[in-house]
Amino acid sequence: MKTKSIARRDALNRGLAVSAGGFALVSLSACGEGEQKVVCAGPNNLTFAENSLRQASHYVEKSPHADKDCLKCGFYTAGEGGNVCGKCEIFIGPVNQAGYCDSFAVKQA
Ligand code: SF4
Image (cartoon, rainbow, N blue to C red; front, side, top):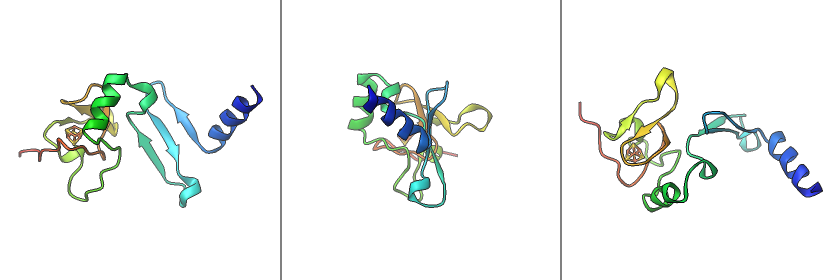
């Protein structure tokens, strides 16, 4: 039990917080400028099937491509009220507007 309480305290000290909406804000202060990265689809908040589909499609919360991300994808619907976590027609559950997967298709004007 002592190990769990230390691990929990360590996670809190590193800036991990899970919101009621199911996504997490991860502080990257250990990496540099105190930047925060929003994780819309944390594996612990998704079913096995949802995780499997995302893994098979190589979904990532931060696109490796400068010109391709969920916000520019035709399958994406923006989150309400400026929420960076929107919806994808392919996946169940939220996706990050900065995310990316193999099914990316340029949004038509
Ligand atoms: S298909 Fe892929 S790139 Fe397009 S919105 Fe869904 S997760 Fe993002």
